[in-house]
Length: 366
Image 1 (cartoon, helix red, strand yellow):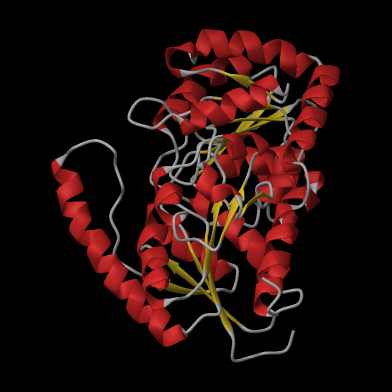
Image 2 (cartoon, rainbow, N blue to C red):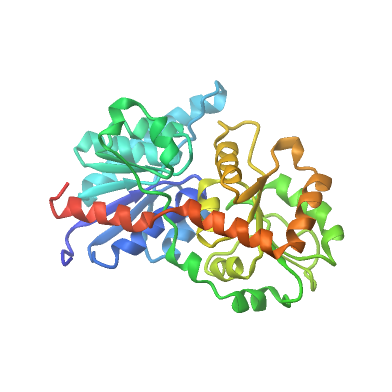
């Protein structure tokens, strides 16, 4: 498509899990669209870095987190959301995009409300098994709603269903094209023992970091551990032949994923979608407590499909996780079975489906 004057705006954020799926859609769009693409996000460095590293223009707005509970923070954040709406409205009015695509998260609400006020059509995508609050707000005015899971369709209001489709969760193409030898070289690991890749999400996870610290002395002769700690979180110990800690990776992740024999991590929709696409058995420790339970739902779905083992809350003791890990590390056949189940969960190519729908809209087909 050759229309340098047209523009597509993207929004979403709060965590990297809302950014990387949107970048996967942008990758596919760029194969046939040469117009302007702009991302409207929060001021978080992890968002800006991820978006700009992908060569996408990034504009930030003030925004507040949406919570179901009553708190003083909610009162403050209401004013941030209102400010975000007016910032986003000004940006969208200036850009004049043909479409806004929302990947969800609390950052997406002001731009979607602003788009609706300006008559700009927008699409929204929900990655989790049950729709979050941001999706429930955005979906009311969205021209089209994409879902990551077939089961989610049963949960949404009847009024949404005519404009809803199940696309699956978008995953960057590079995730499935990693080089295991390059991953081992970056880690400094030999091929003699299985490699565990630990991912606590873009912000890191204290529970998982503490779990890794407790497991390391018991895993030294069984596996090698690659540990993403999250920003400002120190590695569990100095790097050696069986451990490498790092705050965050971006371009290196596909190679590390390819080198890994299994992944330990949270159960954010983005993380599990990428692990599933790469065909990795998962040991999931979903976020619990002050949360709506979306990670628990995601994790249990993967568990039912045979792609993951799940340790929820107090279940994630070092002793329990170690007891499950050791037989899995020793049984390549079982890991292969879980890997096949993981690949099956991903379904079709969500990024293709969403990008094609966006292009049809631009061409006047939708």
